[in-house]
Length: 634
Ligand code: SPV
Ligand code: MN
Image (cartoon, rainbow, N blue to C red; front, side):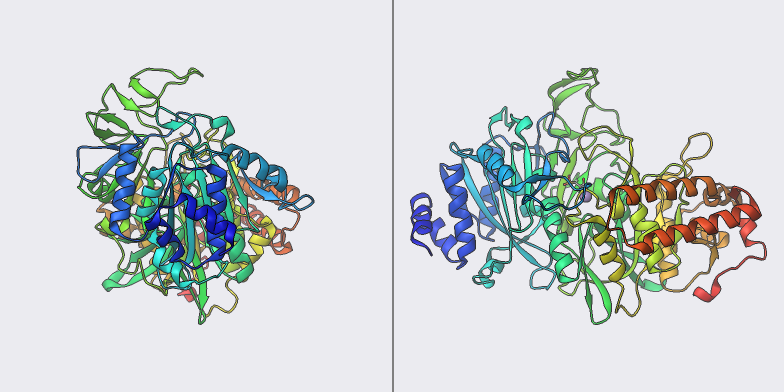
């Protein structure tokens, strides 16, 4: 260890913590820690190992500091983020890029030298009155080639506590990497606090250095901006994966349970707040993960693993009817951190919990009274729409047994979803891998939600639901996805789903529970158990199969009228969507692969030919009339 680094560490770390740090013989890590200490000047430094005592220490510190409030139920705490710090800050999250380099205009960046100086300026002496926590975690199952070691430095015990729930322990793993420079680094400070929340949100910055595989985050507490291993690491991982030939995706992983005990694994990409967690938690199925997956090719198979072991899920409309497993978990004495819910007498309440909410309490705005308005005149909701819970997946009744499998699970199917009121049918299989990547994944659009700061309900392009996190030029990212099936003996089938389709009267055409049928149908397709109907947009289910699945799994009828309303191919809307999305690629993505435009053209021709023959709105029964039931696809 260089003398200067050693001096700094010796000066700030007491014997026990110094020993813990140097037990990991990694010079790059030591330099990182020494630099963070010099920069932020903490009053003390605590190095966490994998021991439960250290996690208990962090948790107790979060409570002692007032960052978390213990609740009535054992193991439960509640954290509040500042009123203006309730979602991911997509404006101030930027890549640090050297002068002259660019990732394309859709990826926000800041000139590296200036950006580093700015963020380090905000971090200067930021920990003067607090303890620095140094934590080691792993992304991905321990001992697997999916795994990436990480170090998180933070002055927020809430952040460290959340990470202890969300990620696998990494201290012992870190010892094994020796002096390797290949690990991710995160430095976070909440900055100045007022009533336990970050005060200077105007100086909130999340700056990502892809070359250094390191992220700075300051003046914020919201998990999506601060929990390094979550969306900050995803951005680093996408870049790393692109160099190394694997994929890092904003995807759930779940075991879908077919007939006779068969389990087929699916991944699914949905923009935030579009049903990703609730799909991965569908009744009768098992969850591997709800947010981020790494996919690798191994011996001709596509396999994937959850990089996390916990869930940081939205707590809105979570009630005993719609989300029984989560609801039950949230009322049991397991470890849970609630954030930005409504507290009354140390009990949490949230929007859509299935009972009337109290009229006053403590929430993300402080003391709250029903009807109170904020400084912009908007009514303050009882709990925030992006309020969250954080818990361990193994504490859930539906935890999949392969959660920690080092080899990951075999990917049978991939599902892409968005928030689309008028175009896509509820479920559809792409004709093949390329069509799936291009016409499903790369064409996802979603209306914006409360998971990011800014206006809700604006229809935005969100390829693979990963637009906020892609850290390479978008065209290259599409190409890498296309190429990923090369060498795979049986590529996964690719599906689109749409839970948000509305009828002419503006009402949703589906209930929340219906998604179970779409996913079970996809499982049958992957295993060749059902046929399909060929439409201009893809393969849709045959009516009889859906009617049987609805009866069997939801105990209700699915009428021929339901089928027609939901599976009518809407030609003008599909054409308009192709035009909208193509415009984005033509104008904003100069490196778009040509195959994308060709595939869009083919889709357009199919739509126009069908409209010519059947009109603008085509009932699937019209296509079925002597039409090509694709039983050969079985
Ligand atoms: C999302 O918004 O996609 C989340 C939560 O999963 S966050 O940590 O904010 O990214
Ligand atoms: Mn997410």
